[in-house]
Length: 103
Image 1 (cartoon, rainbow, N blue to C red):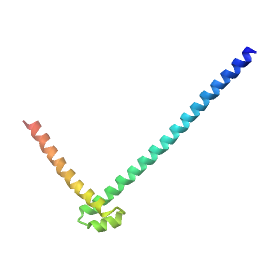
Image 2: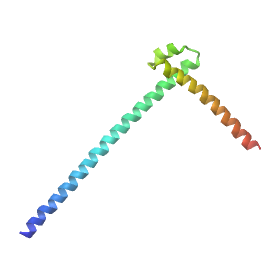
Image 3: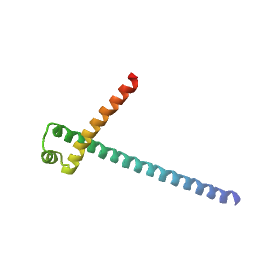
């Protein structure tokens, strides 16, 4: 009698462990899918920004770049202004590094 009761207790513990492991697997799979989707969205955003930079750098109007890329005019302006600021910032850092190493 004692052995049968212990057997059912042990089986219950194994079932509980199996359920917890299965839940863990399902959660991991869900987080992997979420991460993959977030990565794809980030990649699309970066690609559209890169596509918007080229015509903007060719002196195309912000409205035309906006229509061509599907971005809002404000997003295009911010992107173009950020590219200019980033370019100037990179040049400033290069000068600082050059002067640090030349001294």
